[in-house]
Amino acid sequence: MQSSENFLDEILRTQGEVTYEESHTGNELLTILTARSLTFTTRTLIHAATDSFDATDAQNALKIYSENRDHLLLDHLLVITQGEIASEIEQTLGANDAKVITYTQLLVSAMDFTPYLRSLISNWRNRKDGIANYYIPVSTKTGQPLEDLVREWLDGDDSQPIAILGSYGIGKSVSASKLAHDLAFAHMRDKTARIPILIRLGDIAHEQKLKGLLSSSLTGTDGVRNFSHTTGDHEPWCSISRVAASWAVSAARRTAATAASS
Image (cartoon, rainbow, N blue to C red; front, side, top):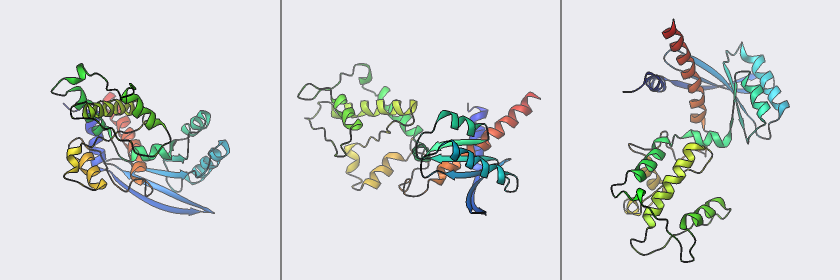
């Protein structure tokens, strides 16, 4: 049975509409996002910081937001920064209807990998051969655990690809599935962690190009929501839309809760 909260989320996402506009005020060019749901409309002022973002920048952003809030009918301020900012600055913004998100976080949230990651976790834990219950880590010829070697490569600065070679049945595919499970689980707990993508060699027989492999691997029943090859090449407005839509969802929930308690 789907909970009423999840049902409301799906209804709002399905019926929602997002538009963008630009408005000139003095020397400032303002970008405004409008998200419409069944019963709510929210207008969000977007402030993208190209450099570091300090307390002075926060006050200037809040000043612009405050000066234009009434005549532009603004509900929120979304600040996009290049990196993490001081907690006190984030608290100051939060107290003034503002939300902060880094550009990296924006890119990560542009596509929803949750169903795909959950499938990687479930596929490992529910293998028909039950190997998850008696898995023995594979080691290299030098005795180093294979997973440690791969993680060192992932955490390093070397951009060269790595290839794992071994005879049939030695555990390459199983190790890849186990590593995909572990990395998927880590990302579910920490959204800044790496996202694993598991492509089986058998799929290459059907798709020779990388885009085709990614499409076949990341779409489908347990695929990535809003999957697109162009994410990262353009401004990820779809991700900002999700932030604004979440405000509309929150507003609807509060209203629904108030109505239910009255």
